[in-house]
Amino acid sequence: MCAAPAKKASKKPQSGDSAKPSPVRRAKGEQARANLKAAAITVLERDGYHQMRITAVTAEAGVAAGLFYHYFSDLKSLTVEVLTDFMARFESVLEIEKGVRKGDWFERILAHNRVVVENYVQHPGIMRCMVQVSDEQPEFAELWRKSFYWQLELLVELMPKLFPQAQLSPVEARAVVYALGGIGETLLRDYYIANIPELRALDLSQDEMAEWLAVMFYRGLFLENPPQEKLQYAGKIAQLRRSIGAA
Image (cartoon, rainbow, N blue to C red; front, side):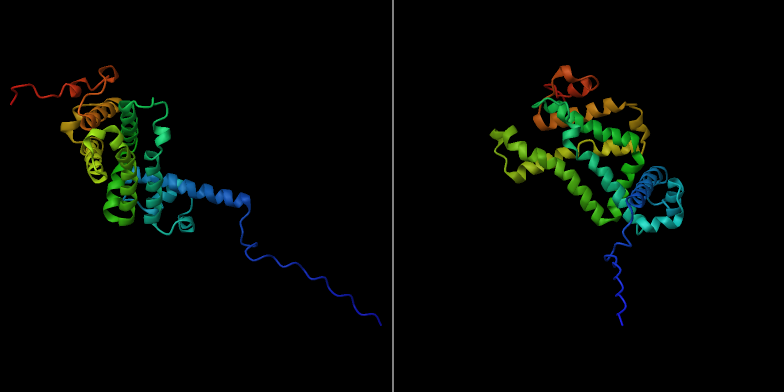
């Protein structure tokens, strides 16, 4: 009597194979997550951080409210991620300084100020949220601090080459640069976020504001005016010098 043929063992799925999403499903998930982040930017800009609600974000994204928790644990994690992405635009030095001639320090400073001013003009709500979240979330405050000072450290490293006669120690160079880094911070916040009437009366365009700030930073760094031919709007700022015998 012949033995019954052995059954061919079926191939067991590898661990995790059944749970692994298909490329199409993965792409849809990534798009849904991106839509929620884009919606969060709109809601933060419109409503502010403290008034933001999950239902407002999902409604703006056009998805069911329950889908939110599939991608984010809470509003805090979503907000921190969105604002961290937003910060990255200030760190793209090569992109910001594209087209700036090497050694042209005024154009270099102006390029960075244009980016900052542009974001205050286009996203005053987001810039306000950066301050609010930083006050309440220490981990985000540290990220923002590192991002801001990372840019300043680029200048700190160049200080000995720019001013060899000063013989500044690294700590002294850092103190000088960090002090200069605060130029314009209060003006930008009060002009674009708080909308202080006494400042809004200036009615400055983006280019005018960027040039004003760039001239003040340049003067603070080099103790002289930038080349006159480069100035279109800030001629009066360049004329700020104390006359002999003035009070």
